[in-house]
Length: 315
Image (cartoon, rainbow, N blue to C red; front, side):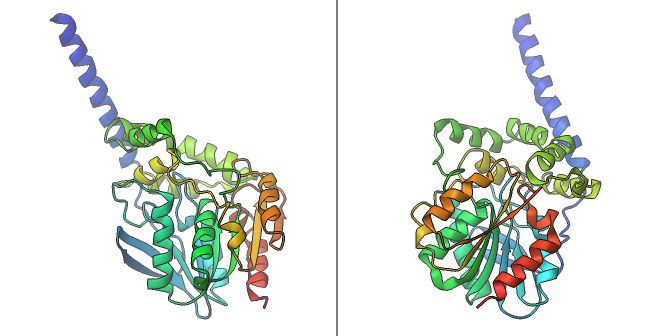
């Protein structure tokens, strides 16, 4: 009996310790605040409220951030104001990220593909240019192939779907998703993943080439968005492979003029991935940014914005 009491006490101590750790981590986070310029709006999607900013007048331009633990429209904040001089810009937070609702659901690539198509039809309501990063690029490709009238020109920043993040999740990955989404152990694991040092490491190794780009204010923004209610649910699907999408069949069917933008030093989606994209659509244009990783649009915002404006204005 004594051994059992000790085991029970130890278990209760572990549970209490995890709960305390989570509470402390969350208390250290400030509120999630959008740094994207423009008017705040919300779209009542079938699965929850989607936050977006809109700014400018002219032809519509939708700018989509990627999907990872700390993702939000913060990643494209430097594009919105600059490109709103020529376009009516829409910059949403994907459901499960940023200031959008974060319901406890199984997020999948199909969920986001369907949400994107519905957003284009319900909110934008006319053919639009689009800029999309990483996994969002794969979702745009799928929608552009099945509903080409929704888009005009595409700018895809290191899109996935041909070489990386293409496979359906296996049982082990599905188990990992369930673990990260779980109430106590999952929340603890996620909070360990998104501590400030961990966020800095991710940004330095994956997102930016120049560590000087990573400021304290940036870390605060990423920390806030990863320590709000429901923050782990969409990232749980990401680490569990549920957001993967193959575009092997849809990419060759895309007829829109397309600009591929890549950081030469990207690691998770290396520049060699461009070979597969150009093999299937050699007419696509490629622009490589030296000394850049996953976010050349932010690290070299002025150059990227000029490139985007010139490409989108081409008839």
